[in-house]
Length: 155
Image (cartoon, rainbow, N blue to C red; front, side):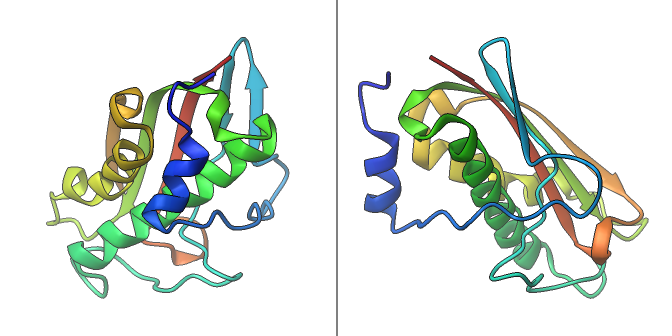
């Protein structure tokens, strides 16, 4: 168990985890295996809607995309909590993979995915430090600008 309550930290940060976003196809939001939870890719859905669509470097600014990556990470935490019952069982964020639908000339994917990484650092502190990939792609489901998946270890 965590020495510090990550659930309490969410409250302190004013973050309320939403209901888990329903899958768009034939998969589950998260899978628990060998002491880890691996989430499926999470879009930045808020109240059933994407707040923005399009390509980063085009219709979506890097700053907007950063905020969307943060929202996608919040949705990933909701999927983790649905598997574990409480984020206080998390011992480490292991890996973050962020996909950024971007124009061909946009090369700031790492800065966009920082929205997810920094949120996880705020919530988990040192346990939120993780390995990461930030990948530019031509298109994501529903024309989402970003998608985030995370792997966490737990007790």
